[in-house]
Length: 324
Image 1 (cartoon, rainbow, N blue to C red):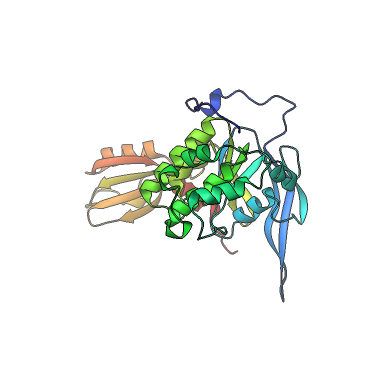
Image 2 (cartoon, rainbow, N blue to C red):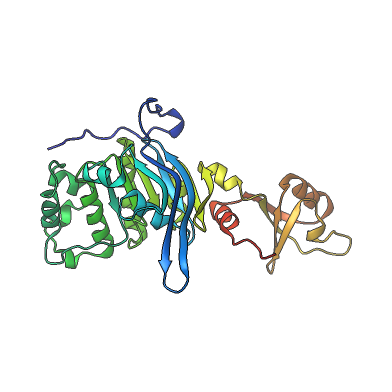
């Protein structure tokens, strides 16, 4: 049985010791493409010429709208589908070899669970398929399932079943955890508990790659965000850098323009205007200039300036290009 000590507090990304030069990346794609054949319409591209390198110990969120290619990309990393072109490597190995060696595990949105077995029986059954695993009790504890180990799977909630899939992924003590919408069936409290567990896994040195539709999960947990749209990577970097790609700030003020005051659209830096019953909401490319003009030339008050959010960046960077 493999044992682990309690994980140390999570080290901030900037303080992590970089991998040795000879250490292969945890996940690497070079010129990766994948197309599916649709009868009557020919090949349909899902992934288009992706280059991506994720180092050991990184925590990376994969974001993008439906149809962006996220799930196909993760399926290739897990060896569940073969790329049409390019190359995929996990710790320098072919994905299927890495999975067979227990170096990579996944928590997917769905997956067959035998409803008549208990939670513990399920974990023991899957453990028997590996040559070496963590102890069943340890896995149940780390996945937060020890208290319901005797419950039949059929009586587990959707969130509990997703935790069970997580427990199964922990069995081989993987170096890389791939999570595809892991909290989709969880309520808010259960999601928080799940990410608390994932923080512990990341603190122990595991590489974590997860796809999610919850922006707050990406902001709170990821060191780095890879944003996909239309099968391509459109942005890649720390959360702050991705957020900054949505140009401008939002300025909200209590203000009803009167004669002699400029219209909101006439203020310096303003690129967009929304109005409510009592407030004006301005998008500005130069928030300092806009705020100065508001205070000097108008009767606006209760002025607030807010940096654009990750949601704003997501919408900006993944928007469909305008038809010419």
